Image (cartoon, rainbow, N blue to C red; front, side, top):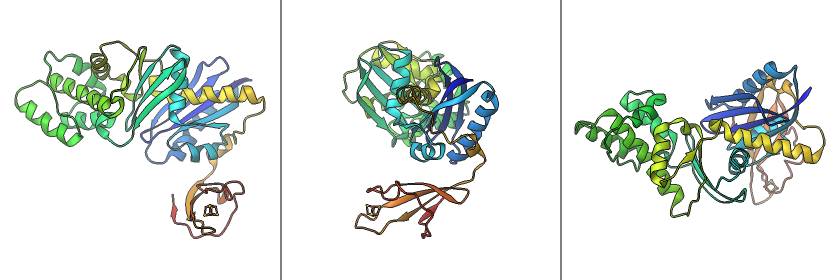
Length: 331
Ligand code: SF4
């Protein structure tokens, strides 16, 4: 049996799972919209990975990244849990070792990562303003009656520039309607929207930072040729779109899991594929044992507590117990 390293990226819009073999070749890839139940998506994804690879591979390491990394990390028994910046940078450096600048634009957030000599020296994240993320384009595509997949190619057909005021989605929509009324064509409007997104991205994240080549553009939105062209126009340079640009976070954390396990030289703490049959429940309670009054998150599998987190002193995390508490929330 060959070794397999699983990388899981839990984002707010998509959940990505990859399986890399010892030679870092991708044996499994899943990009799935997050319908708001990440645990179920991860269970389904792992079940499908197991079905495809169980006769050829054994799990040698598991890494989890993304905004929901702590919960999924506990559930899977991850060997490594790291933030998205580290995971994305790791995957990019593997493919483009001399990268200096990463533009990452996802469905609902975007990032700028600055790298020097394979080390992250600066970064910025936007999780608040939709106007610099893929959801801005999704919204406008729907308004124009165009499939988002066609957006990029249509943008490239524009023969004239038109500036859309895209500071926020509401402004963009009203400006787009008036530009349509002036007679600008659909490709010109779409190109204007792509440029508006890129302007927002640069206004929110770049803010005067000095950027150096080589430039890499990744994230789900990197499939859009119109945005790529708009970024290249903005920086007056070429951007590279890496292979599997839509799952770079998952690739990065799988690579980090591989590195971690090689250093540790011990078996993975992965809880096994039986978890795909378990029922998980998340709830929280307020610990009143001191003035901090921490909100402690409790994760149960089949009614039994498997992990607790959120306690500042660590008293619950180090000893997760089945206690009778009044839940504040449950999911
Ligand atoms: S979890 Fe620890 S730090 Fe938080 S309220 Fe309870 S005793 Fe205090």
